[in-house]
Length: 282
Image (cartoon, rainbow, N blue to C red; front, side, top):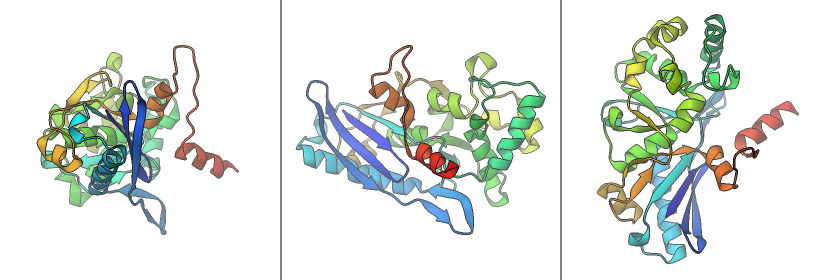
């Protein structure tokens, strides 16, 4: 199978055999867009991501000497929370708001304030770190910009957007959203009715009225299939059409599983965000 890991500056594609283990891997880079005048700004292009995925997949196949039709599945993880608003037919509106884009910190503070005032708690308690949630980052930053508001149809985490693209899905309600991502960053909780209730969202900002309906679709774990590889992307990647693509997840969460984490174990995954936070505290 092919395992895909989208990092902050590059994507890694690893070809793995169930008996022989890792066969080969390849990396392709993509640019991170920053602005000197706005240190909170950090975006990336969906097209850049998909081009890099194509390049890395073909390079890994070549290095391993494995025909593309031998690959039986492709699974992926991404950074989080990295969010992209989309318009009609799942076409991106602008670029991804990357995990290190902090322009929504004002909205996050408002959400935290309303959550405490209303005594509303997300799935993992009142941890304020998750209240920089993607649902508000996308809705408040993208859909409220006057030139984009009328085009806004929905918003997706990077892992869900890439899976939907590879599967050729064009309708938001047909996209299976990662519970890993939605529960950790978008305040989704099945026991609390999914996303925060409408009255909570409206108290944060009246412009969020109806956003629950725009973030529809099935919410699923990674043991479910997001779809199958479309013929269009199979040709681009050098793979065969129809192979399964499981629902994606965040890189750190899958890293913990890859490390052999079991119940009652603790794994600390140290990535770019950890290093960045540490450097800021020094």
